[in-house]
Structures are given as structure tokens and as C-alpha cells.
Length: 292
Image 1 (cartoon, rainbow, N blue to C red):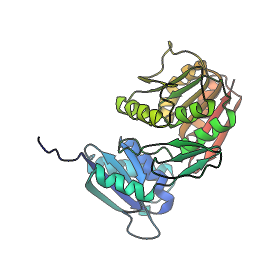
Image 2: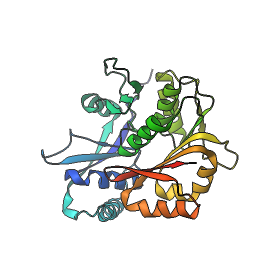
Image 3: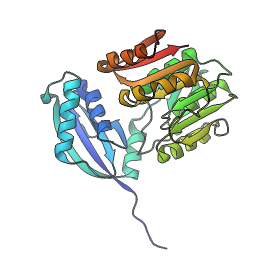
Image 4: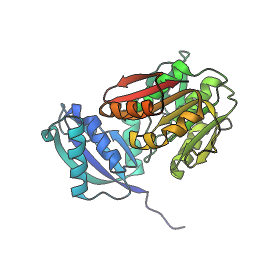
């Protein structure tokens, strides 16, 4: 039988001052990175972080510089915050080995996000196991944590649940494990690869039969749900905000929004006659919780 080389990806690793980590991750996401991580294995000094973005093919150097410059300006940081930019090829095996060394469980309210190999003591928390995947990360970013906190605080057993832009499926899985036997759970994403990973993670957590995963965006035909999460970006949220509001019967959580974009999302809510909302913060990110 033929021997196939292991899959390879390309890494754009940017070492910078710790305060610039969010700005760099924002830039990498704008460059359409398949996934990002803070990679402590690659950093050059103890007072720095290295944020790595993974790609099928590396973007043009000039485009990278433009996005980094724009991101630093958004976060009010100086260009000197970035110290090194490195490009390299990395195999799945190397990437997974690094994750096993450095990814530790993250506690958010009643939830614990953990890799499958981590042995956890039973302290009553709800464990959401996520298999690390090159393309979609682990979901422990501030935006995901903000959404999980909202689910922990606002989701009630028996509520139907819609996860728009599900990614790894963490939010839908967490709510399904909290609910036990939800009446209707739908998780959608326009990326078919993301849906495939989300399905695998749902099976890993024993809730694969409870959640319907669908490739595509929401539409006027999407049913109404009690609880809706949309962890996207503000440029995606604003155009579909009227549709999201109509889909949410009780609670709508919007995240993936930078603090600098707060006025934009507040203005959009005001234009839609929405006044009953709370803004929660984590680092440079916010989540908006709208109660109907």
C-alpha cells in the first residue's frame, strides 16, 4: 500500500508583547486563519507571547503587514509591540503534541472545557471535552467564555437552543449537557469542515443525538428558539441582527465583538428598538445579552 505523508499546514507565528495578543489574534482572524493559538513553545523571551495562525497557504507578506498595522491601531498599540514574525510548515502530529503539553482545562461557571486526555476530579461541574483540531482551536477564547457564562446564568432546562456560527460546537454541547434532554437544539455554520468537527465533539460528549447540525446560515425559514447564541463578528452580526432578534424568543447572546465596536452594536440594537440588554466584558471583547 502507498505511504502517505502526514497532513501539513502553514504557521504564521508572531511574537509580541503580551498586551498585543488579542490584536494579533484579531489580525490573524481577519487573514482568514483556519485557527489560532497562543504558542508558548515558539516565543523568544520570557516577557513575550507568540500567537500562531494556521493556514492552508500563507497570505502575502504585504497583506499580513497591513492587517497587523490595522489591528494594532484598533487596540491603540504601537508597532514596536511586535518583535518577530516567523513562517513555517507544521504537521498535524507536531501541532497535536504541542497542544497536549500546554492545553489545560478551563473553568467557566459550572462548565469545564478540557481535552479528552485530561483526567479530572468529579467536583460537580459539567465537563465539555473538545478534541483539538488544527482548523478550529479549542474554544477557550474570551468570546467563547463570555457566551458560556451567559449560558450558565441564563439558560433554563427545557429551553430550545440555536447556536449560530457553531465552530467546534462548544456552546451547543455545553447547553445540551446542561439540559440533559433538550426539546430542540440546532447548531449551524457556513463552514462544512466546522460542522464535521462539531459533530465529532458532540458524539465525544454524549450529546450527538440531541443536536441537529446544519451547514449554512440562518434565514427567514429558521424556527424561533428560546435561547440564541451568535458568536460571530460585528460585521457579520449587524446585517443579520433583525433576523437574530426574530429567532430569539427569550434570550439572545451576541459576541465576537471588540470593545472598540461597542458603539456599532449598540447603535444597531437601538435602530432595531432594542433597549433591554446587558454588556459583559472579558479583556478586549464584549458580549451583549438581550432579554425579550
